[in-house]
Every structure is written in structure tokens, then in C-alpha cells.
Length: 161
Image (cartoon, rainbow, N blue to C red; front, side):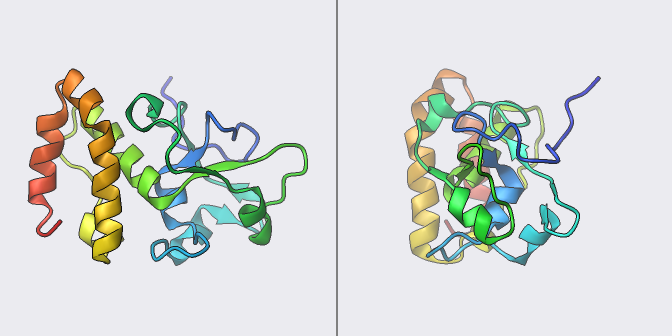
């Protein structure tokens, strides 16, 4: 049986299994210039269902690529959006880490297509550069796994990065 694409609640969220992928990319982070209204499709306040992907469960564990960079305690932020957790802290990837996690997931797969759209998701030059800087941190591990050329070719396909 294949692994489900999402957890439907936040019970397994931890520092190790933080929220990542599309749910984190679209979550409106405080002070950020990225994110979007689509977070409502991942965090349905009325039904109480959260469709989230977790690092190390639905996504590869990318700690070996990026360490703890971009993982933050999102307990208060999630509570402001109707997702209170009194029993334990909740962790989420910031937009840059979530995108980098998605890129690593793709790089490790056999897929030819990466669904991260650098220019669309990170329209400001400063935001694009922050993502590229994070990917640079993961370069040694990608090289060791013979996946850096795949990522480099994909980056070239992104018209202006």
C-alpha cells in the first residue's frame, strides 16, 4: 500500500516531522512576501481537517541537506488561524525551506518535472536569492547523491533566477 499524500490532522507534527510542501508554501507567514490564499484548501477551519505533508513521512528527511534552517515553531501562527495546539509545539517550514524540500523530493525522484515555479512563487529578487542560497547549502549532499546536475538543469529552465 502506498503512503498517503497528507496527514489530515496535526497529531504527528514535530520538529522532526514539520509541515512542509504546498501547505507550508501557501501558509501566510508573518512578515513574508510569499504565501497565498490557497492555504485555506490545506487548513479547513470549519471541518477541522488539515491536509499537510510532513517532512520525513510524506517528504524525504532533508536535514542532511539543510540542517534546521527554515524550520520554525508555528504554534502561535497556526493558533491565529484556528489551529490551536495546547499539548505540544507545532513546527513548519518557512516558504524557502518548503520549496527547497519540494525540490529535493523531486531531485531524488525519477520525475522529469519539478512543480516549483521559482519566479512565480518568489517574485522579489531578494526572495529568489534566499531560495537559491538555501539550495546552495544542500549542494554538497546533492553532489554526493549525483543529483546536482538534475537540479542545475532545472534551475536553468527557470527563465530568470
